[in-house]
Image (cartoon, rainbow over the protein chains, first blue to last red):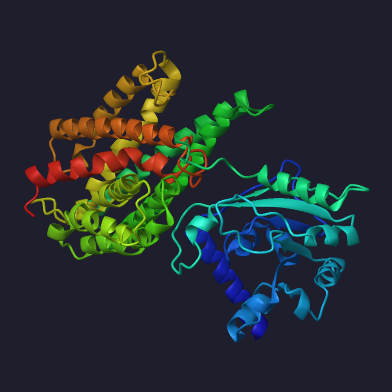
Length: 214
Length: 316
């Protein structure tokens, strides 16, 4: 029964996201990896992972699990249901002092079980004017533990305008989700160099801001 | 079967015939020029023809469903067009409520007023009430950065995508003596003439186009395409007089006005796209681009057509 509700709710989320944003995916030249991988995306809105999830082909969508903050999603019964049952999120504890489980371990377990991850390496929603916040080191620790996993950069465009922080009504605007070609950790690559390279790969997918050229 | 639906049926059969003919030509061109390597122009032509089938079927279903079907179809067109337009304009966070209002209050009310046949309010609701209320809502947040530009762009988006577009279904509210129950054919006349004019301008331009008519705005439009398209669409409009309350001469004259408005509407909307640095309004219709790319000429001709018919033919 709960599973049925979860599936209906998931379909409703996808339908709603599509109706508001008419979201369109732009695929990479060489296609998406069919093996479990890590999609890493820019984060500016609560709806980000719904959009990535909505555009993925059904087969890949069913294996994809968003990585999200446990303290946010386990706050109430409804959000727990949405986070855990509808989107099957990998819930990690972000505050280091209060942790009972190691986030990297949770993520590697999910990958070993055949799931893909949707990850937001900025760690929190970007509410600044900068296009991207500096990545947290989680992505590096994750690929250090699983170096053969493909990393797919994903740029989500316009969703921050659909629902800016603090607003409750979404504005219908066309959004695009651009997937890049898969990347790997190269041997002997240091943390800073790697994170720098991932940020550059993600930014390379972002379109020029429309109409803002004066 | 009354005369309106039998005329509609004749019309639909005619359009389906044209589409079958177009699909056959598209198929032949594909075999001839695009069999080995893809030929972009032929691929695009076939994508367009396929999209036309879908559009004709959707409009057909709306016509069968009657008044409510037509209103819902155009309300959705307005919604999708407004979404494309607002995506390309300057908005700031302070405009959030004004925009939400445009989508979720102004647009439904405009179409509700048509349903309720409240012409007096329908005609001024956006130009007066929305015009004054939207900037008030934006100003409440106290953000003055590019204020005039932001407010003006939202007004323009509403006028084009909601106000002007709603004048197509508004044709249903007219009362023309001797034409009762046949108003849906006025919509068919407008849409067929204006869309055929676009298609014929494209065809004439592809076949005989030499001289560019507006190289800065729309490099694909030519003088030959313009003249040939407008002339042939006007003739077709005149030959459709039997579905309208007009004489053949009147039908031809109205068709000429419609096609000219449509042509210049296309130019204006091209200029807006150039200004925003995009080639298409969106990707809703395969081969055509966005919905506004298809609707631009209708949007510019509908209010003029509506008011001419209302002034000289309608009692209401």
